[in-house]
Image (cartoon, rainbow, N blue to C red; front, side):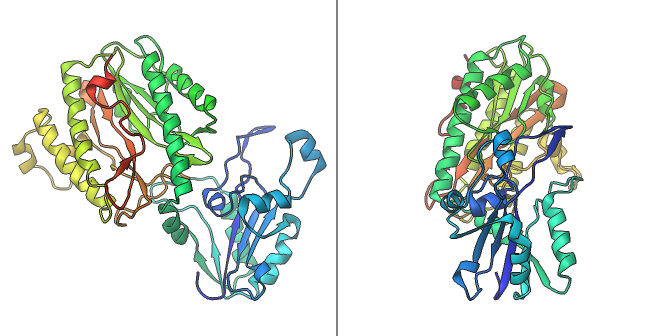
Length: 404
């Protein structure tokens, strides 16, 4: 933050589901990162240069309501909020506007927080959207800046505590996948496998999914964001899992592809091993100084060679292809890496060099629509000073460990 500047954050609000119900609450990731507070009605002010130390960091929480306690359960009090957040000055939100006015008028610049992700748009107007407009309308002569670039940079590097939590989330997700492997068979439905997964999540104290799971049998796996999960599982087809639990607000992200009847056909095995070979080569690149862009470009080069071996096109086709429409794009349409943290897609900046403490996915894939074959293999990789660490370890990925 620049000299004499103030940063202001607001917690998420509850989102209505039906006439008298809300969806399960999920805190804004930036707010949770800064405070650890998982409740609505909260605000945070940061003013590092304020002459009074007690005014440099102020957390505001929802005022106590006896009626809300009766209907919804215990509320957060100031002492508990201090313990959770480490913030020495906790006030109740009914005085937020008065305190903000006093502080903002003595500051030179205001940092405000909006969710920034280049591949996501929504028509939903969030409390953060409204809050930004409200503040800028009330104080139109101030200079404003974005807090997202600062937080994005901070959140890319995980502390040891964050790494431990994400590793635990990965462990729960691995248990769920292994359970699904034991229970899958022709004639079951995708949603049944989702239910098996969710059972293991809940039995291990995960709060739920880090993202809506993809449980895609056969040709459904060729739809990258397939979400219906309602088709029957057929004999001699593949089943693609893209799944991850959320634990203490942190995500995990795993993809595996298995034969529904327990045995790959020769063609399926050929395609599967092609993706697996590429994944093994890519994992070696997850070291300090590499970038997502380099991972992507290397993947496309390696997968192009594998696709030629699989007979999907020829070297001559590649020589004559439209450079703006490369042949491999028909069979691999997505990027190969993104950061994982409080959000499943924590960051996607392709050009930021890897540093120790970053956690990224490695997820090459192959999608042959005309053959009903969709394969994706994905793990979460921790960047260290030395060799990369797979947070899923050696979780069933070789053909021998996937087949039964």
